Length: 463
Image (tube, rainbow, N blue to C red):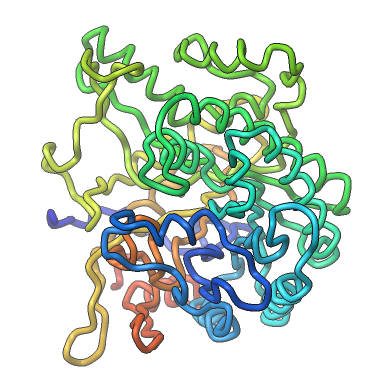
């Protein structure tokens, strides 16, 4: 891992304004555990994790961070660190075990307890409807590649809206739809492990459609709801100024940044820069879906971790692009090999804000994995992570000062957890977790946030 030099601009919390939202984020599958307790059905990640060779450290999330039993402790930690927003997701298969049909009251009751704990502590709950854990019963019918998932997701959304809408006013429909469609239905490296365009393209279309339909359900069912969706995005940088690399970068931008945003804004798929998407239009021409893809979101969640340097590659099937890996470019890296570059966040915030239909932006995830272990004194000295947040927050502040309507930053994540195909090797938390004992230890980055968010905070360089 390359050393990272802190060049962050000096600023305080007050520079962001009194109305700026400061939050922390977790997800159901990565944190809850209790994978088969109290009536919960299996999700695609339960099934995928049990397949040999799919999780790099051969682990599973049967217990994870045991949030199901320790939610009060973890929500108290979020409050202790100074945050005002607690973002979490609902497990679809905990609430509706078969994806449709009978509702599991024990699952509903659990989320009422979580929401009530947040409200009692003065934390605003931001609830994500879908964070990658599709019920396995729906995957047996084709999952996101089958049109029935759209209607099932509408049903799930309506159940959640009617159960929790009197308490929850801030909703995030999908978490990183490009991530779960590309990694799960094209590359096969995430659940459900499918590979190829024949799965990917219909999964994209159904996720775009479900994103809008769920938004309409929330608008109908929850009075005063603030509704958003969270999109992964990266600044796309062409490797050279040669025309082939410039066109490759445009294709990458259409795929990574615009694929789910532009349809939601009523612009349709970015087919001009990524002609492959014409296949979606041809496949669904008779369905008359095009007017149903758009929804007037109150905010767009931006989730940016690293930029991508893109070059033309004639040998790469279909897309004809490849990434110039960060490691080969001698740039600062996280433990996962992701480039640390706060300017990339600044650039994508400007890019998304330039769309006429985007009202406001919230950075709904941001964070970094490093190899965190307690030192002999039991302290986790994660200075690299502090520097990471300083640089990325500097990018947010720069955008905000230039008039970009970015109104919040939610750190990923509160505690170390199950990081998908990485298992427990990738630690993103502000709080260290010993996964054998479930002991929590606040890392230096957690204490840094507590100091930064306190009323008497000094500038960010005081670490």
